[in-house]
Length: 135
Image (cartoon, rainbow, N blue to C red; front, side, top):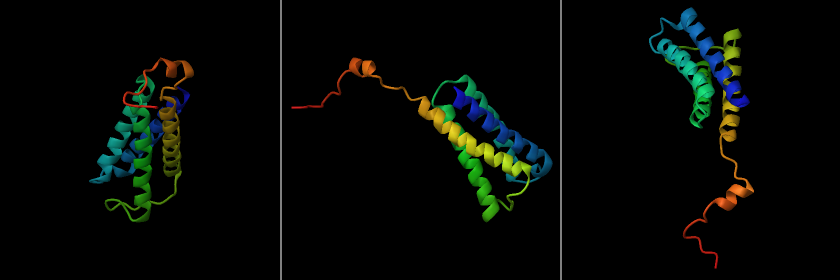
């Protein structure tokens, strides 16, 4: 649960930064503006799901959120994204980037932790694989 909470906080931090940036800079941008708003609300929804739904999907969403958001920023800093050319400067950039890296790592850890562990007792109670012949 700790990794799920860490992933939720990281996704929420990135979402909050994008919401702030939407108000401050990108609300008038045709494509990037709505993308920042979608990022903010989508990130908030993923953060809630990470806390309330104990399923493998929310950690996977956290990983996808972090990877896609950070990738979009890297594209914006290198070749530009829909006419927006960014730079690796400012508190918002570094805060969001760090949060997205944490979201990916904590989401991956939570995803791995959500896999059921097969103990010796559980393995003994399962039926053998049908069609497997060991003669």
